[in-house]
Image (tube, rainbow, N blue to C red; front, side, top):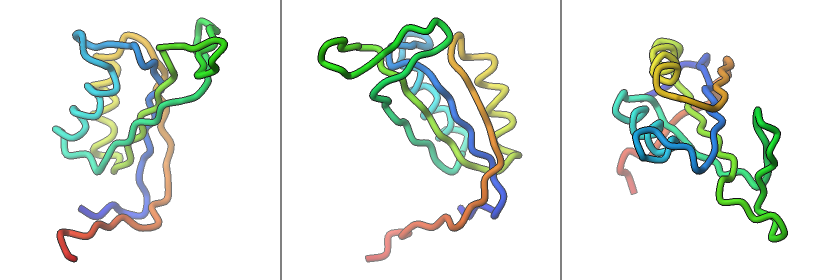
Length: 114
């Protein structure tokens, strides 16, 4: 799959302990993105952050949190991202979702060649 030069980057900010039907939110989102054929998804675990309730989550040994911030990034065409945004609006109970247009410099993979 090749992405056009103009694409959309979707970012979902959530917490490590957030769940959808007893499964980690980040896992549900990535699996759904794959099921829908989106170009790819990456999950980042933050070392420190806070959300709407202003409670700081950190990896600091003095304030070790088991609910670290998570960011899921997905890049694909608007035609695929917009319906996925609707899925997120229906599914997420907490978090922040942003999107922005990005320029794809290149998108390639090895296709099994050695």
